[in-house]
Amino acid sequence: MKNLLLLFCAFTLVLTSCSNDDNNSSEDTSILPKTITYSYPSPDLGTNTKNTITYDGNKIVSSISSGGKILFTYTGNVITKQQLFDVDSKGVETKDMEAQYTYENGKLKTRITREYFTTQYPNGTYIGKTIYTHVSNNLISYIDYTVDADTQIETKISEGTFTYKDGNLVEDKNVRGTSTSTRTYEYDTKNNPLKNILGLDLLLKETEISRNNIVKIKRVDSDLPNPSVYLTNYIYNDKDFPTKQTSFAGDGKTVEYEMEYTY
Image (cartoon, rainbow, N blue to C red; front, side):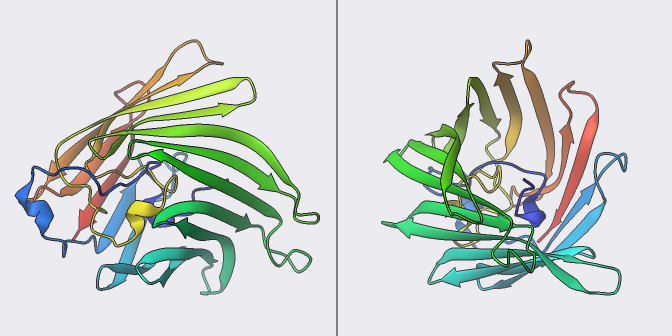
């Protein structure tokens, strides 16, 4: 299933706001990305896209590109819904995906995603559900389910854990059947460009976003003989926010994509 957050589609992490911050510039919560541009060296890897983001204060309202848009709904200060629309060359919009969130004690409890909307299935042909358990400040467990669109019967497909250190996700372990996939993360000490968006820090598993910026991901799969390592380089502004990032494929040399930010 595609990542719901089109504007953050090149990531795949978790944002958290509980870490200590050594950067004085992080105290300025008015710094928000206004545009995010994705560039790919080959059309086989992706489509070059520029997303323009609008806000109501620090609440994200929408992310719009030439081919799609995302609308965000808040209840108080938490995001309770996202809707992703495809937009064709004539400007006709078609809802592609939707996610709804519930919270318990100020923390994410459930995430339900729906996609492939039809006349027969107005609530989505494919329905996914994730339930989170906050074991401690540094450990969150989760279980993923598929939900039958006709019977509403839930079937477990995987489970896993998120482990944190100093407010950053350092390990994502997922078990699906007899297969185990583990990702470990290393960071810089600078500011993640999305850190000041209100409520985004609660949306676990939406994107690979942390308080700081990922410089290295190591993925180990039990079904594969060798681990994969992904590296990312950054250029920063005078506030220690990235203005450009370059991400490399598993060989550490081939550019997979680049992203540029304006604030």
